[in-house]
Image 1 (cartoon, rainbow over the protein chains, first blue to last red):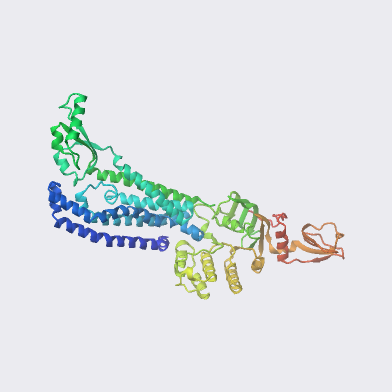
Image 2 (cartoon, rainbow over the protein chains, first blue to last red):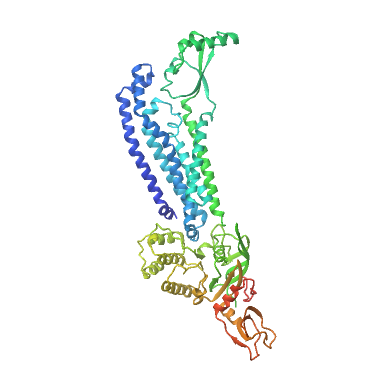
Length: 322
Length: 300
């Protein structure tokens, strides 16, 4: 039965391999080039001390301009798990229904349950393998970027590193298989899979930092110095008057408005100016060390949904006789 | 002496969204028969065969093949039942060799040598992809897959519809070789009776979703007579049985009657109908039901 599934779906496996090779051809040179620029423009030395010097700041901006294409490409690459997973999942049962070969398959001596379980397992393993290769490729390419920005960054970092990719691939595959089994048509199932996958990803993406309550802290010089290159993900900054210096609400309001007028708003708050007015900047942030916690939560959410969808698919194949 | 039952339907019905595909269908087929399942297009032949194969489940009643429910989810009946679907689907991107390997991997009683021999005899190139074979060759390959499974009951839905006359002849001789050698039961459907007449010894007539007749061809022919006599003057002897069909000319009446008493009236001529005449007479009037307990059988 394993041979049968392999023979039936080897074209899918070859296609996935081809896509991964293509990605490697695009990503590996980009990774090499980024590393080269990163070390030869002295940026590597800027990272520990922050962007205090203008040389570092210029190097950083130049780097960002040079590799802007790559960041944009990464944004689009969020679709790859959805497209690949759907392309493998949607035809799994639907193509056999369309071509009538399900009648051939179901009239051999293998029970339907075994038949669908072997197919689903084989392809799920292949899809997970593709996800691992995909994650490894992008993570390797992104190494210099990881030193410049937060790994929690939505759309370009968090979604490609760690384990969430496995969840996305599996989810798209399971959704495709399920919708293909329900609609009995390959193309509508493919379209429907993407129409569910993309919004599901966007919703989770926009709410993931609130899976765990964010932390707050009072900004100080060293935190701000690392903000641009640091790893924590700052959600917002609010100003607050120091309660030890101002006793009443009126005084605090006054101090805040004075500080807002006096200290020009730049990319980062001017701490010394604020301090002179007795005002502090309070950051709401997600600490970088939550990366793995958030990864595991999100991976589990997508993977468990996938397992649920695959279970329903197996049940439908087992019981549907109409 | 009664043979064990190969196929047994009781009050069998299948309802689709568009209406009943098969209704209140009860009959038995003894093991070892070659059954012609005939009826016009849309009568429910495919539905009946799919129910017997377990591909679909009944909405009403029961069907048993070789004493088992065919739609058992564990698939216990599967090794003993072969099914050839109407459009004879094959994995088009598999080579013929791959298809044989597919059969070998999914069937415990697979006869690889016989399958290869059969395809060699037919001159079908085993390294070619199934999708590149002619329609006739695809049918031969699909039939070979079905036969090599060593099933005890073969359900073949319109197996010769895509074959030319020569291929039909070859198909039936292959099938008869297997039937004789292995004593299996075969159900063949067709809307053209003459396709099946030569090889079948049992007939199931299906029209408008109902079974009209299910009995052995010998018995069916023995029970029916054509009576030709003067119009408006029934024969002297009182009983002429059930009139299946009556047609009248100016001065002559032709009756196809079931179980008439011996006709002694010399004005009436009695003839033996052909199978085709009997079947057509039933198909013409779907409201006529033949009693279905004609051949007493014991539950196996």
